[in-house]
Length: 173
Image (cartoon, rainbow, N blue to C red; front, top):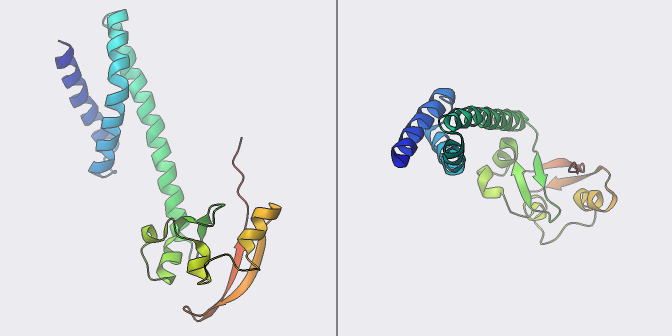
């Protein structure tokens, strides 16, 4: 009986996810189904044992709330990425180790590389062609002062001047 309930739950969950997230590709739907199935089946089974049939209702309500939460998170991230990629200037997010965490499409296009191929590479190697930050590096200044900084350089490969500006991002804690 437990396996049949699990099987029906997984089938129902897949249909619900595909219905609510029809705009998301199948891979994202599969990830959501697997994630929720792994974590929620144990809770629903436990509540079902404790509360009888009431537990299944509780589990479905809880699952729907979680699904709404993750859909909102996904939609927010998707909107942010769309906005980030629509900026026509070269924009990147650089970690304190000078490695690129994210780049927009304009940044990748200027360097004739896919965005995912730039992630994890040192910014100074790509922008300045050096093995370490340049002496007037705005990123280095921002890390030391926690203040915005900027400099202007001539990028030989792009054959143009670039104004490089950095701003600190503080995590809310």
